[in-house]
View 1 (spheres, rainbow, N blue to C red):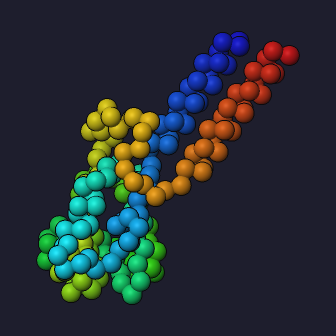
View 2 (cartoon, rainbow, N blue to C red):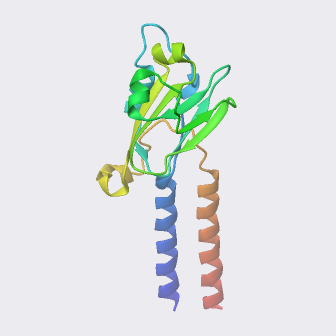
Length: 170
């Protein structure tokens, strides 16, 4: 019975570790957030995206002032056309959950700013297309997300396993 509980505890620990990897939160543009890039840096957001690995369940956090974020299709992205959006945000702090694999396209709602490079294209990988190194314990990107809930869940699982073991021993 005690060995069964030990196996259960190990399984819970592995599942919690996988949950830490499963969903991350990315602040778009890093510390500088969502803004019109410098004139000589129009590829800023796509360069930022290329340094990150996006997976289903991850989220993008757009922080901005006097601007907006528009989720569009590929054609609208390349033409800075926000007339037929998939989604539009203008609250200054918008979070988009990447709920499926594939390409996602975002532009500024201000056409002039989009033309100057305030647009982002991200590719979200499906779970089965993840390379084996994606399960490395080392961080793969500069994620700005909080791991508090994951660590609390892991601590709770270990505490729960400890209580189960004490019950079995007594």
